[in-house]
Length: 203
Image (cartoon, rainbow, N blue to C red; front, side, top):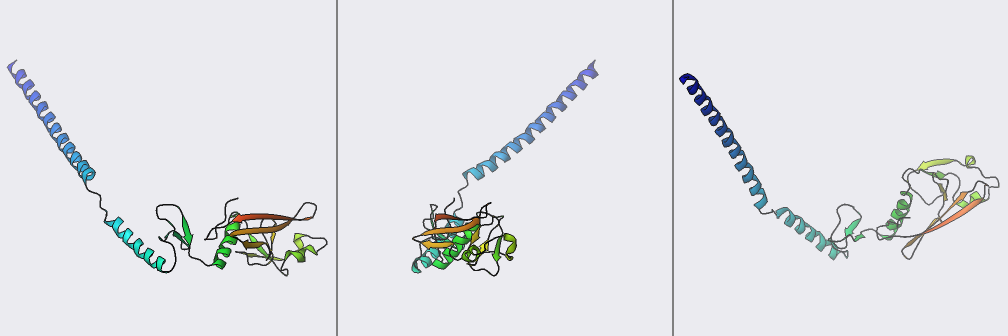
């Protein structure tokens, strides 16, 4: 009886010791986690990167202002700069001819899967109009990657020529032709606003 009591006390002491060890380890983990959280929550924010970027933008702004441009260059697009860094406005560092080229390119980019083909031996739609029995099979074409002011057809069989893109008063006027099922030549006209970078408004 006495030996069983001693064995019980021994097991009880062992369990108490094991429980104390577990509590000690949990306490250390809790204190460590609390210390890490408190460090990162109360740590002052490091503004050095922000200050560095701001200084760089100020330098670029001063250069652009001296060149007659508006402040804050937009590094996301080589053509653009911010009109106001805290808003969405932007301007552009391109001349008028570049703006027109970008506008035409932007017009065709609305249909990313459309392939452009230059129509060989023809310069304008007027020459096509003179063909009495027109068939696309009569035309010899070669694939191109951008409109070049010569007679061009897209994947929807729309014809564009040197008169298809007219720029006036900040607007782009687009005129193209296509043949109906009855083989009649039809004309479509569109008008777009364009910004300083040659981006056209969405249709």
